[in-house]
Amino acid sequence: MYLISACLCGVNCKYSGKNNLNKDCVKLLEQGEAILICPEQLGGLTTPRKPAEIIGGTARSIVEDGIGKVVTSEGEDVTESFIKGAEETIKIAKTSGTIAAILKEGSPSCGCNYIYDGSFCGSKIAGEGITAYILKRSGVDILSDKEYSEKIEESNKLIYLSDYDFKRKDVDENFGNEESAIVYSIIKDDEEIITDLPENVEKNMKRLIITMAKEMFGLETLEDIESATGFTKKEILEVLEESKDE
Image 1 (cartoon, helix red, strand yellow):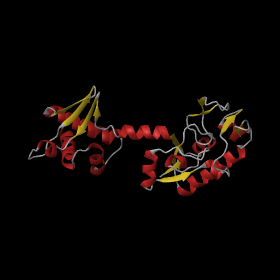
Image 2 (cartoon, helix red, strand yellow):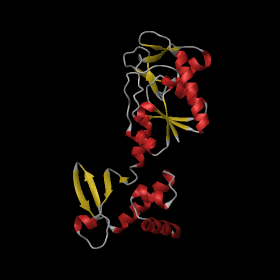
Image 3 (cartoon, helix red, strand yellow):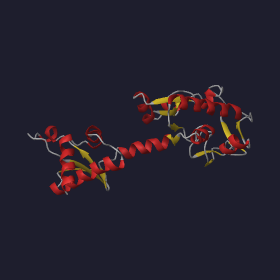
Image 4 (cartoon, rainbow, N blue to C red):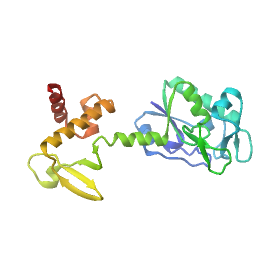
């Protein structure tokens, strides 16, 4: 279960009254694996509202030492609202037992790796938002929306090798073969070539992909490995048995 910045799932709670839709986060919500939070709204701020940035300090110095503040583009001090929103978010995390959060990068609440520098000119600096800091201090793993999407993209590359994109094909339909076989679409320099792999290469490729699925991505069940790699359970078992014999 993840805490997710609500704007990432299409909720119009961004300062502008809009959202920052992220399809990977929406998928988590659809799967029942997300609890949506908007620290600014939880802290009592309205939507839409004036944009806010951290000035005169960092999230850590604001929370721990009272040095620095969060102000709007009109100079209004909204620090207390941001701290309150973070504290309410922590309550939700503790009540739900959630130990990970996906947050909107750059936000004075949710930024994980960078925030805006307080000039309201769009300049970014390394740092984190108030909620991100307090979540991390409380032991909740945080990652930005961009980092999460990159993680998903990497997990979808289990069957990519070298400079090529290997895609599993159903040759029964495409070539009218009576028996199912494995062919690959090799894409390089925007040109697609349908080819059979030599038997020894195909066997080693299967072993590599299945090993990656198990050891790099932590997949254990046949169903999970089948879903991630596209290989049948029979193929997976054959590779695993051969590996045991070696």
